[in-house]
Length: 148
Picture 1: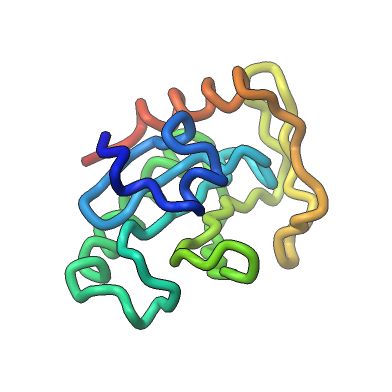
Picture 2: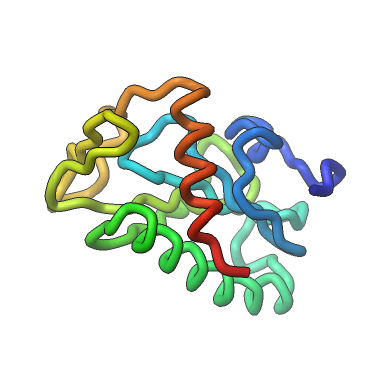
Protein backbone atom coordinates (compact mmCIF):
# COMPACT_ATOMS: atom_id res chain seq x y z
CA UNK A 1 0.00 0.00 0.00
CA UNK A 2 1.35 3.37 -1.02
CA UNK A 3 0.43 6.05 1.56
CA UNK A 4 1.87 8.85 -0.64
CA UNK A 5 -1.20 8.64 -2.89
CA UNK A 6 -3.73 9.20 -0.08
CA UNK A 7 -5.66 12.34 -0.93
CA UNK A 8 -8.09 14.18 1.35
CA UNK A 9 -11.08 12.21 0.07
CA UNK A 10 -9.36 8.90 0.76
CA UNK A 11 -8.48 10.03 4.27
CA UNK A 12 -12.03 11.28 4.89
CA UNK A 13 -13.32 7.81 4.07
CA UNK A 14 -10.86 6.19 6.49
CA UNK A 15 -7.71 5.39 4.48
CA UNK A 16 -5.64 3.38 5.05
CA UNK A 17 -7.85 1.24 7.33
CA UNK A 18 -10.78 1.10 4.91
CA UNK A 19 -8.82 0.26 1.75
CA UNK A 20 -9.87 -3.05 0.25
CA UNK A 21 -7.80 -2.90 -2.93
CA UNK A 22 -5.27 -0.40 -4.21
CA UNK A 23 -4.44 -0.07 -7.88
CA UNK A 24 -2.06 2.16 -9.80
CA UNK A 25 -4.65 4.90 -10.45
CA UNK A 26 -7.52 4.10 -8.07
CA UNK A 27 -8.28 2.77 -4.60
CA UNK A 28 -11.40 0.90 -3.50
CA UNK A 29 -12.44 1.61 0.08
CA UNK A 30 -15.29 0.51 2.28
CA UNK A 31 -17.63 3.41 2.91
CA UNK A 32 -17.64 3.70 6.74
CA UNK A 33 -21.33 4.72 6.69
CA UNK A 34 -22.92 1.64 5.15
CA UNK A 35 -25.93 2.87 3.14
CA UNK A 36 -26.25 -0.73 2.03
CA UNK A 37 -24.17 -3.81 2.77
CA UNK A 38 -20.81 -3.45 1.04
CA UNK A 39 -21.13 0.24 0.12
CA UNK A 40 -17.80 1.42 -1.28
CA UNK A 41 -15.93 4.50 -2.41
CA UNK A 42 -13.80 4.31 -5.57
CA UNK A 43 -11.25 7.15 -5.41
CA UNK A 44 -8.86 8.33 -8.12
CA UNK A 45 -5.24 8.91 -7.12
CA UNK A 46 -4.57 11.61 -9.71
CA UNK A 47 -4.71 15.15 -8.25
CA UNK A 48 -7.60 16.36 -10.42
CA UNK A 49 -11.05 17.66 -9.60
CA UNK A 50 -12.82 16.88 -12.89
CA UNK A 51 -13.61 13.43 -14.26
CA UNK A 52 -12.58 14.54 -17.74
CA UNK A 53 -9.12 15.52 -16.44
CA UNK A 54 -8.13 11.94 -15.60
CA UNK A 55 -5.46 10.34 -17.75
CA UNK A 56 -6.31 7.77 -20.44
CA UNK A 57 -4.50 5.16 -18.31
CA UNK A 58 -6.78 5.93 -15.37
CA UNK A 59 -9.86 5.47 -17.56
CA UNK A 60 -8.49 2.16 -18.87
CA UNK A 61 -7.85 0.87 -15.36
CA UNK A 62 -11.38 1.92 -14.35
CA UNK A 63 -12.88 -0.71 -16.66
CA UNK A 64 -10.89 -3.50 -14.98
CA UNK A 65 -11.73 -2.25 -11.49
CA UNK A 66 -15.48 -1.94 -12.04
CA UNK A 67 -15.55 -5.54 -13.25
CA UNK A 68 -13.72 -6.66 -10.13
CA UNK A 69 -15.98 -4.60 -7.86
CA UNK A 70 -19.13 -6.05 -9.39
CA UNK A 71 -17.79 -9.61 -9.28
CA UNK A 72 -16.70 -9.30 -5.63
CA UNK A 73 -20.00 -7.77 -4.51
CA UNK A 74 -22.15 -10.43 -6.18
CA UNK A 75 -19.99 -13.25 -4.79
CA UNK A 76 -19.87 -11.74 -1.30
CA UNK A 77 -23.41 -10.43 -0.85
CA UNK A 78 -25.58 -11.42 -3.84
CA UNK A 79 -26.63 -7.83 -4.57
CA UNK A 80 -29.32 -7.14 -7.18
CA UNK A 81 -27.75 -4.07 -8.82
CA UNK A 82 -24.85 -1.64 -8.39
CA UNK A 83 -25.18 2.15 -8.51
CA UNK A 84 -22.13 4.33 -9.23
CA UNK A 85 -22.70 7.89 -8.05
CA UNK A 86 -20.17 10.62 -8.79
CA UNK A 87 -21.36 13.46 -6.60
CA UNK A 88 -18.17 15.39 -5.70
CA UNK A 89 -20.11 18.23 -4.03
CA UNK A 90 -18.25 18.13 -0.71
CA UNK A 91 -15.12 16.13 -1.55
CA UNK A 92 -13.55 17.51 -4.75
CA UNK A 93 -11.19 14.63 -5.58
CA UNK A 94 -12.57 12.42 -8.35
CA UNK A 95 -14.47 9.57 -6.72
CA UNK A 96 -17.56 7.42 -7.00
CA UNK A 97 -19.86 6.17 -4.29
CA UNK A 98 -20.43 2.53 -5.23
CA UNK A 99 -23.72 1.41 -3.75
CA UNK A 100 -24.77 -2.24 -4.02
CA UNK A 101 -28.55 -2.40 -4.19
CA UNK A 102 -30.84 -4.99 -2.62
CA UNK A 103 -34.50 -5.72 -3.22
CA UNK A 104 -34.61 -7.64 0.08
CA UNK A 105 -32.71 -7.21 3.39
CA UNK A 106 -29.42 -9.10 3.71
CA UNK A 107 -28.07 -10.83 6.81
CA UNK A 108 -24.34 -10.52 7.41
CA UNK A 109 -22.44 -11.38 10.57
CA UNK A 110 -25.67 -11.62 12.56
CA UNK A 111 -26.91 -8.17 11.48
CA UNK A 112 -29.69 -7.29 9.05
CA UNK A 113 -28.85 -4.71 6.37
CA UNK A 114 -31.61 -2.93 4.47
CA UNK A 115 -31.60 -0.82 1.32
CA UNK A 116 -33.88 2.01 2.46
CA UNK A 117 -34.07 3.54 -1.02
CA UNK A 118 -34.95 0.43 -3.03
CA UNK A 119 -36.21 0.53 -5.77
CA UNK A 120 -35.52 4.27 -6.06
CA UNK A 121 -32.34 6.23 -5.54
CA UNK A 122 -30.10 5.36 -2.58
CA UNK A 123 -31.20 7.11 0.61
CA UNK A 124 -28.07 8.80 1.95
CA UNK A 125 -30.02 9.83 5.05
CA UNK A 126 -30.46 6.25 6.24
CA UNK A 127 -27.47 4.06 6.97
CA UNK A 128 -27.08 0.62 8.48
CA UNK A 129 -25.42 0.91 11.88
CA UNK A 130 -21.92 -0.55 11.93
CA UNK A 131 -18.84 0.06 14.01
CA UNK A 132 -15.18 -0.23 13.00
CA UNK A 133 -15.09 -3.93 13.96
CA UNK A 134 -18.15 -4.72 11.81
CA UNK A 135 -16.69 -2.68 8.95
CA UNK A 136 -13.44 -4.63 9.23
CA UNK A 137 -15.38 -7.90 8.92
CA UNK A 138 -17.10 -6.57 5.78
CA UNK A 139 -13.70 -5.55 4.34
CA UNK A 140 -12.26 -9.00 5.07
CA UNK A 141 -15.29 -10.73 3.55
CA UNK A 142 -15.05 -8.67 0.37
CA UNK A 143 -11.28 -9.18 0.14
CA UNK A 144 -11.77 -12.96 0.12
CA UNK A 145 -13.97 -12.57 -2.98
CA UNK A 146 -11.72 -10.07 -4.81
CA UNK A 147 -10.06 -11.10 -8.08
CA UNK A 148 -6.95 -9.24 -9.19
